[in-house]
View (cartoon, helix red, strand yellow):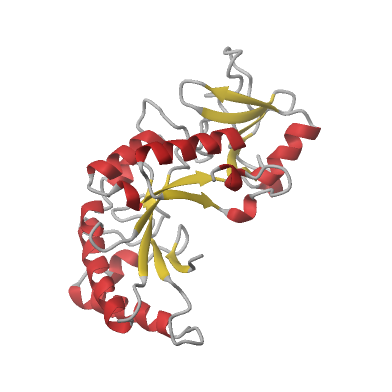
Length: 292
């Protein structure tokens, strides 16, 4: 087991762009990261954390409103990764401290991410192949479709990473343990995919008035309340729909997760990543274990 510490995230990426904008700032930032990791050590003097996961959402924009953005974000990200690799190697000469990143799944964000500049310095790219569609839209859609015509899909995301020079072995395929959820959804005219691609209201649609359900919350609704799962053969995506309550939620199952794991093996990818493990219901679903 390795333990990395994460830096950034959807709500904590406000200053990434500013922090990597000049050579001086990149050097300071990198040395601060190395110094932080040096504060926490094992009994043998080695660092407690095996690495750092950079979660900048996102270079070039597309993240939370108010984040700093610059046209050279993608380029600067690679230059920072180079400086960080140097700082970590200097700080810990007897240990390879890993650098990984949360990499975008959407083709528009991939185009600005600067993947080619990151490849020489990063150990893994944890590709967020989910949130392709969600409750920022007023029409129901798949959270993590395997294939899709609009380029928001797992296959297209992996293809773009490979085309940008990311080695297959450095790619970890992301899989969600939650479902994006809408309410007030009509069945529509397609009896095979009721509720899909229909108008819906994401507000207060899921658990605790949030626009989503964790896997551990959805499965009892299927078993006890009779919500019905449906599989989109064309896009290879699963969802659950309750016509009586007008609720639509994307979903993952043991079968869909195992299919992703099979794809990882066939493509020679480095593994899988799940967001996040606290959503798992280990007593009934075991989605993570189904990827093994």
